[in-house]
Length: 96
Image (cartoon, rainbow, N blue to C red; front, top):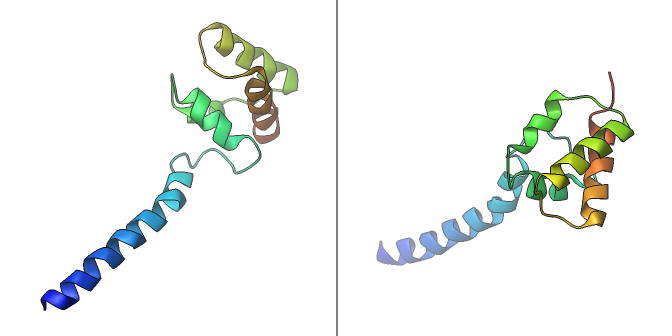
């Protein structure tokens, strides 16, 4: 019994660790997969739920203006990251 327990516990721990990245990808179901999603989640989650973006539909200029406003309000990212976020949002949530 003890031998089986010693084999089962490490196996369960490894399975849990392996599932971690897959589970993390599903934290924000309203955000579609795509280039820049990970940057958007990391930067925007500093202040609010990244899923608030899914409630808006803007063109590329509108998303850039909104991301610029967030940067002016204190969002922490590089210029390249803000550009990546704007592109991700414009692709994922275009005007309806």
